[in-house]
Length: 630
Image (cartoon, rainbow, N blue to C red; front, side, top):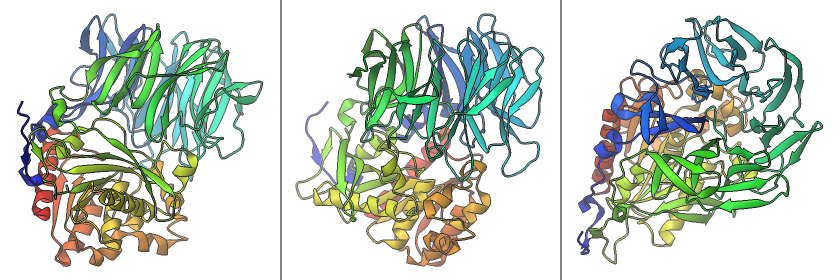
């Protein structure tokens, strides 16, 4: 490869990282389980129109465990997750289209439904030791209401009968049965709380017939967010709580919660989707865990006997899930050189990892991969926020000494989510074409403790936009970006930040808004159950009591102040942010003679899964940026 670099501005940089490569050769992972030492995971394939498939890896071979006529998934809690479970070579999974739950015998390959057809959706499965019953969360859509009830149910695997065990709370998660089959634990919460605000942890005895006895709320107080209740092999209960300000792991013993290792790091994640896991027993005395420090995830082992904590350098800087069985540990994770991957490790050598499945083709040359830098920047109110900055990187091109790159400021969704310290093909698509790129973990983001996460409450649409601007200007001061070529890009709640930044500030040359929120009042009319009261915490009140705040924070009502061009992307089947949001703001810009482009994708939801649409979105966005910046 040539070592001579040409001095060119960004629109002349040519890259081997194409939109087609990203879309057609990339897959995404969600659920992961391990049984008999064999790893199983669910992957979404853009080249199959986003179909979700359960895959296993055994004897150095991959196996699709679910045939083409199944699409694994669930709509429970809106964002899904927890769509399959496996125990003793018996696989249970939910089909996204029909809502039915199926059982597959791994040995015989026989697949059969274990529930009757109906207006229900199931998720978050576990079973009793004898596998007579399957316990899970069920969403009841029979009433066709905007806020369908959820409940914990018991499915008789033999008779297909379904019995409601627990109902009444707005949400449930993590029904988990002790190894001896005598107890069950679960989490529940009610509006207006989100699961990272406050949850309750409940415990009950199980009868021989699988019924619940002696139900008891064992929560300490009302303002703790519990996460991932887990049983040890000796039937001891462990769970994460954020009572110290960070998600730490606790043992529940003699009606008390004991912190097994106190650390100012998050050993948990917000439950946007069902079934994430951040710790796993290696043995009765050891727990392998992942934890976040300044947004970068690390791996450690806690020794329960001597309280020792050991960090393992396995190169992973982002970890979504941990599972384990038969001395094996499985992860979904990655690092700045590794996009999300399914990874296997041995409990006796946790520093060594084996990549079983990479989410993208491994043909991207390292000489085109930009490595991120952790950025700590001052905010205008004299506090600190965080970001990951990616400089332009291309072995064939460079900037002249007096040239600085354009900067794409990426706003993650959520807003209680976070940008990951991990290889992203889309970021490399831009950095290899001469753009600098920064992902801002503005205040409100996860991975920095409860106090950092809560700072956004009451300030959504203001603090997030200001933090992004402060980050961009900080990078410009460091000569890492051109102040006259700043772009802001975001999706979902990040789209609100994009539009608010353009309406109430004037530093960006253009913006890219993907299924973004333009009208907060209209959002409350189309919102799904999971996030029905989320806006109240973020905006400081309900739309009924604080309508002026909702009106003033809505970019649609200040569209006349937007002077920068905007490109929009939306799916016409989005259940979270209605497509009318994009139509409305685009029409307002058109009336004000502000250039904008609108891309509406048929049959796409909140996140694009079809490879063809992903290609179109990437190409159109790049062409738009290039046109506006010239």
